[in-house]
Length: 191
Length: 230
Image 1 (spheres, each protein chain N blue to C red):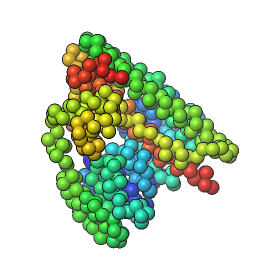
Image 2 (cartoon, rainbow over the protein chains, first blue to last red):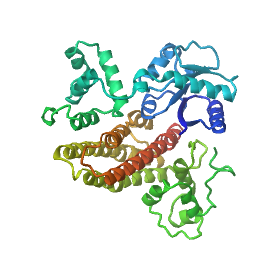
Image 3 (cartoon, rainbow over the protein chains, first blue to last red):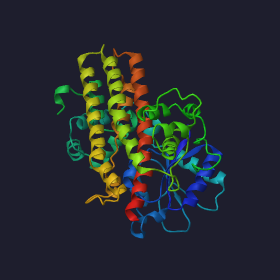
Image 4 (cartoon, one colour):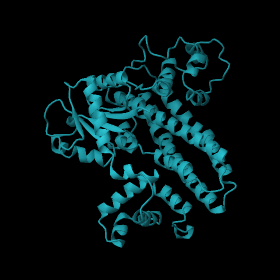
């Protein structure tokens, strides 16, 4: 199965060039091309890897671009840089002078380096994750869950991401079904 | 890849049966467009003319489904009225054909289970159906009438295609959840062959919705945007 790439590139020359490279090398496929930032479309796509020209963000928000995309997708993000424009924190950088082999190699390395602990271990939910899953299924908000277990909201969100990654279930309704089917909660405790 | 280049795999002059044979996901497209089997040796162009379908638009839609890596571009010749008609037919196809088939497979799958998993899965599915139906209703009630008004040269008051793009919500998540619930967490006592049937329907719908979204976001939205700005 070829890895799906989402590109956010204003230049058709660049996106078509990449498409050609991917077609010749066969390992990746350019599945989505956006010419400007669209949060909704990044969120609705399911890319394995994202390539972005930092110039799609205005200079004020360019520094936070990597973090912003991170809120929309878990995929590694590669910067395509025409010049040194100060964007930071990307998983790799490609440019016009890279050969097709180098581009593919950099993408592959970014994917390898990106797999986080939860994805590597896969597997069963931890005891804490089960507790949090039960709260989510009962309709509690992140803040309420954080207060109940004396955690930060950020930690609750991380747990929720890991729960979804392990189970493959993203929506609250779906997680409720999971909790019910696995007898983690009683049907009467669901609102 | 250019739709009108000599080397493009789908062409107006090829036989309709040959085109359908390129990728079986086209079966759903043919079904909702009311193209009846028995094409004999007729070409794509001939069948389209006979059924009153715009050939270029038809080829563009088929390419989204059947040509790997194909992306629509502004150079493609396309009749946006036909696109709206196609999207509308797709909505009916999903709601009237695919979802009932999936519902039936899920019911039969859980028929031998205890009542709890049966009712839990039934209620999750009906939530999904409700969500999808609302999503389509918004497009049918607001977006398509607006697009038709723009195409007829009237200005659609108080709405723009950019607004639609911003509000274009994600309806794939619940379907993916359902897939994982069946594949990974199938309750005891479920019928395996019906589970298989449910998964086939889920995968088919998932693939089709993905292509449907490409047609909305990459053909309809930019096409209407160009007319708005003209």
